Amino acid sequence: MRLVALIFFLPQSLAVIRKRGFNPNLVLSALVVFLLGPAPLHASFNKVEALPVAPDLGTLEQKEALSEKRTPLAQKLLPDGEAIPPAKKTRKPKGGEPLDPRLLDDDVPAGDPFSDPFGDEVYEEDPFEKKQPDIPPLSDPFEGFNRSMYTFNDTVYEYALRPVAEVYRDYLNEEFRIALRNLYNVFLAPAKFVSCVVQLKFKKAGIVLVRTVMNVPLGWGGMLDVAGQEYGIVDVDEDFGQALGYWYVPPGPYIMLPFLGPSTARDTVGTVVDTLLNPLFWIIPDAVTGAGVTSGKVVNETSFFIDDKKALDESAIDPYESVRDFYHQIREKKIRE
Image 1 (tube, rainbow, N blue to C red):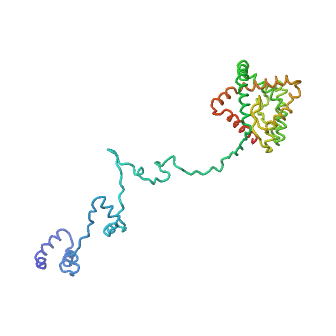
Image 2: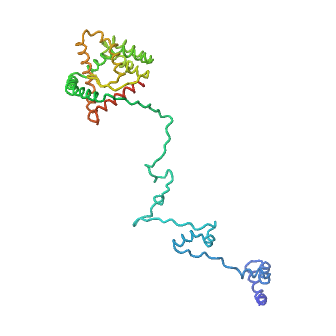
Image 3: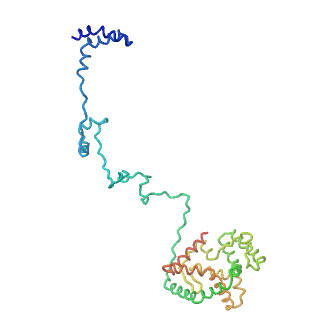
């Protein structure tokens, strides 16, 4: 039947093919191979099997159950042979956009902008940071006596020294008070010089000598700080108590001296040595004159820190402990400088 149809329609088909411009020999050969070709090639087109279609996995719960069971069907559907991963559930706010999945994930990566800024992070120590040595504790075995002396000194300050110092400050300008302080400071030069030499601080000892030589003749007996203001030679703050501390003499117990204020056993010895090295101790003829000179020095110094003393008393929970700790820290810092 196919051969009869080919013979009947072949002339007409060749005429159409020539009119279209195709090669009739190639077309004729293709038709013969198609109709009369071997049976396996022709049969293969009739016996093409349809590829299996992936079944519908259904709802999300069915997909998760299928993933957990790892059925052969699920493994066949995935290219790598793995089970279908369970889908993550995301919460949606009422009437808004979906939440950022990073807000719902507990495993927040490091450096994430949503990480906790107050988390426990480990920081490496700075190798270039200068560590301050620990200040040894100060013993206070005579605390009962010291508190009594502190109350006594504070009473004298509040009802005698402070009112006099306030009047003194109000009526004498600051330049005159600084000049008197510089004059008293000149008589401390021998004690400072000896303390610097004992501590092997020869540069500071030289500064004490240069300042004394310049300020006494050029600064009206030392009332003007010519060396500091004109040449930038700053004064040093040394005493024999610091010299003892430099050579590892322990401070000893804390002592509150009447009228003189806070001290330690070591600094009390240093105060005695400084007094003996002060020329005024040898120049003043009697104790009454010496007491007057010392009182004038105390009033002049107090006029500079009245407000500081008031602020300390108002901010401190226990003024006695505040004064003791402050004094101890200042003394230890001076010794280590």
